[in-house]
Image 1: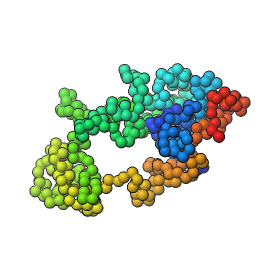
Image 2: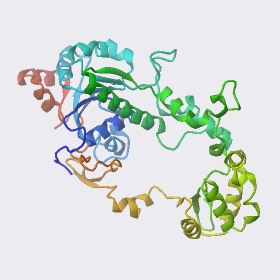
Image 3: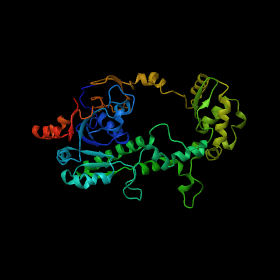
Image 4: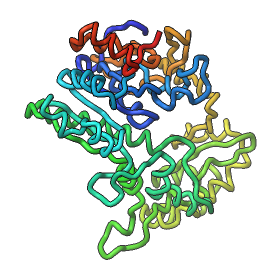
Amino acid sequence: MAGETATGPLAGLRVLDMTSVLLGPYATQIMGDMGADVIKVESLDGDVTRNVTPFKTPGMGAVFMNVNRNKRSLSIDLKNADARDAFLKLVPEADVLVCSIRPGAMRRLGLSYEDLKPLNPGLIYCGAYGFSENGPYAGRPAYDDIIQAACGLADLHERADGAPAYSRTVLADKVTGLMCLSAISMALVARGRTGKGQFVEVPMFESLVAFMHVEHLQGASFEPPLGATGYERVLAPHRKPYRTSDGHVALLPYTTRHWIAFLDAIGRSDITSESWVTDPADRSRHIGRLYEIVAEATAGRSTAEWLALFAKIDVPAMPVMGTEALLQDPHLDEIGFWPLFEHLSEGEIRLVGQPIRFDSTPASYRLGAPKLGEHSLQILAEVGIAQGKIDDLLQSGAVKQSP
């Protein structure tokens, strides 16, 4: 809890986090949980999610706190020449820089990878933004909804449900954030072998197109195509939580054994020898028909009855859990997934737990999400900037320190 020593596999690593909203902060919070010293470099106005409600204290919104623990905040105006010079003192001490500012803006600030590489040849510089710099969409602004539409996700909802729709979670940001984390980890491995840093680009659009089309490329995987794009099992109209007599349940017979066991259990042994049940290829062509049989059967029993039956025949099943109910889920409670943390300004808060477990280098929750500029003086002093110079930056308004 608060004040713990970093124990994770990234202990001793310093990360400059020049990101906001969710994409970058999600990636860098995981690095912080895993022991890295993450310096959140914010504008004088701070990360826009600071004031997304609800909050007890302005600037400390729930969304912000859920992706910015284990970080220190430096609030600085990088358009100010003196402040920029102060920031550059951090670069030689850093292992990783993650930036979601568009590349053109970083070049104008003199903070591109080419600008910083001479100061620290071992720096891993990760650019995470909307579109690759190598294509005609370079430089376009992008947020999660824009990418969900552009990558094909909204269209898949239309194909399955009759109208385009966004996922009910900030999917593009968080998927790209995980890809950032993966890319940075691999770059650190390469640096361990060669001693050299590098620039890593992780664009949202390409990341989500890749993520989506692992299964949805389908017939277009071949040249000439063997069929259309779109994974039929996922797009089947009856692939959804099934209504029971008292609620909804997720049931997923998947293998041939699963389907035969399920069909026997509901009194449909008459079709268990059919090739569209027993043959995986034929079954994939008729999966919508099988899901329809599931949907017709489930209404006659309660959720608890279905869960008991599926446990007996060893086929995957879970109830449809509400987000409120998950706060009392016995499994999550047993593993301590919702730890309580004493935040210096917000009092006791509930954290979203870290699901990754290392048995010898565990994650830790050391710092609550910082107030804007909470650590500005501390960070600048650490890199040798004289107190008089720090005072000048504060008085000019180029650096902000929270009370």
